[in-house]
Image (cartoon, rainbow, N blue to C red; front, side):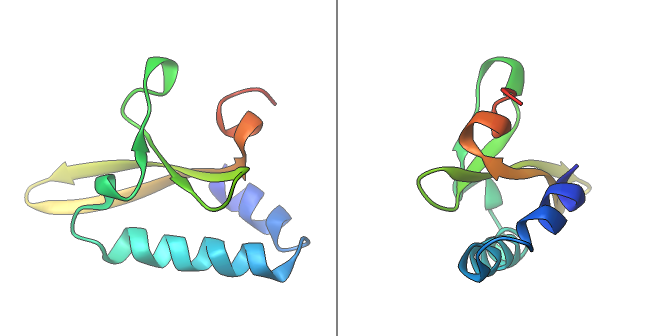
Length: 86
C-alpha cells in the first residue's frame, strides 16, 4: 500500500515528495525509529505515525529480531486516510 500511495504523491507538489523521501531516509537510518513517530492505539496499536506536515502522515511498524531493526512502511497519506477513513 505504501508504494501505491507514494507513486500518487509524485503527481503532487514536489515539496511533499522531498519531505517523504527525507522522512523515509531518517526512519531507516535512525537506530530508534520508534521515537521519531507517535505510537498509535486501538486498531492501529503497534504502529507509529511520522508527521510530514499538518495533514500528512507516514504510518510504519518497527520490527526488531535477532538484533536487527527493520522499518516497514505501511502508508503515506493524509490524516483521514491514515486512520482508516478512506
